[in-house]
Length: 257
Image 1 (cartoon, one colour):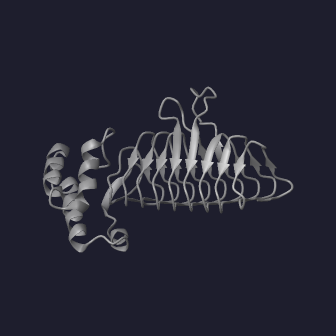
Image 2 (cartoon, one colour):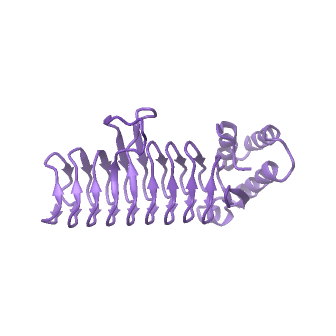
Image 3 (spheres, helix red, strand yellow):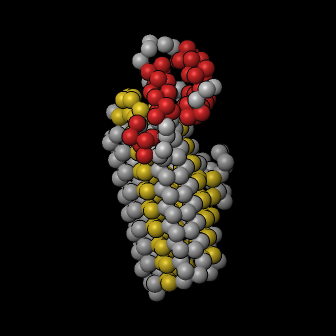
């Protein structure tokens, strides 16, 4: 380990042999950090927090702090961060609450820019991008490859679908289906994330089917139940469309529409 002399690492913390900890950082008793991870200066990592391999955590972050929930009563809830994430300056990630599963989880290969907040009991998938000041309230889930533009705000219990895209300053009050591009306060739909899907290897036929499903949901004047039925029928023959169909069928808060 390369630990700066001014850093404070609790004897009970478990750090892999090559972890680097910068000046004036504080690592708490119940923290576990795996190989290849670097922790910048003035970072506080506390709580029951487990951090995977090859992460880069920049200066002034608060990782594993108590949830901002008035019901929290010092229960040993957890935060888990996967591998190869970049977490830029002034980010804050909270542990979970016993009112949910007691776990906040961030997956692998995420690019998280400055001042991002991930609240208690959130689940973030893999390969996401959170631009500066994106904020998740409690119990939010974000699917793989989703992109949140700067100053995006996500209401508690909202789901953000895989491969979706939020423009700058978006406010999400309802679930955002996979593949859909939104912007505004409150968010309104503006087509699908076609360029992102092409870059990730979606076939032209799959993208065309997703576009047709988008028109069914947003452009054909159907009720939500009517659109769900038509999209479910189409998804039987198009594997790329199934996540879209399943997402809108399971929405508890309603969807952006």
